[in-house]
Length: 193
Image (cartoon, rainbow, N blue to C red; front, side):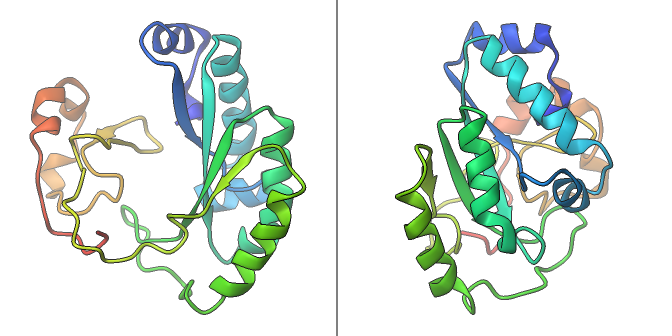
């Protein structure tokens, strides 16, 4: 969550990592803010990205494709490219936290989106990854808590980026200090994989 990055956090991350992933859902500030549900989120995210880059980290962006961001995919990828970001993954919208179900089936428009992305790839220097645009149910074991952790908009660390399978009492600040418990977390309550 680049909105939470300070110069000190960026230096600390750079001391043990070579790259980080950050979310930027639109190159248009008001669209990103709408998707994130927070005015000023775009400005804070781009500020955090700059701090991470100043610390020497390579940046990978994650962009959620939904009803608001899909019409602006090309613009968003160009903005990310202009920011010097190495790659972007276009991630199909899925229910996260209290967000509910996606408003649209991305299977419906996937051919047109993929055609647009194919053209775009020839026009920009950034790598555009679409393998997560459509999230298949492939039977693989969920990486929640092992290789994937989520940080919500309040800075809370969660074992699952979808925040599924968590009882309400598990959504508490102690998750920040209980990394070992998070890494041992298994819920299998989700149909995302």
